[in-house]
Length: 145
Image (cartoon, rainbow, N blue to C red):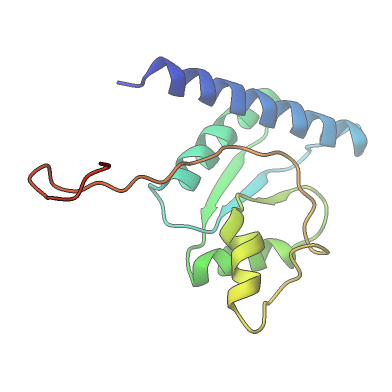
């Protein structure tokens, strides 16, 4: 059962994504999209990025009447999937669900990146903020105190 906050947040994020994608489409040729759209999720299936990518893809497919394919390409901290998108045609048909790791952290951790996070990507929309949570067994002496 989803909490009302999550349901409202999800609706807001999907609406923002659709609005931003519609703005992108209007800036391109009037026939966009005229072929399937690919959303690369550079993380394994079942995670937060995959879940949101699939929901966004479903809503875009309903709005545009074109197939939206979710392509999970995990590995290398997200760099494998992000690299696929960086090297794809810059036509708006291949998107990536990136995050702070794929576009900020990896640049500072790795001696060489297969892409340039500034030159090779155009941001479209901020999809979500995911908070981290650390939990322990209730019988543990660790607590927030």
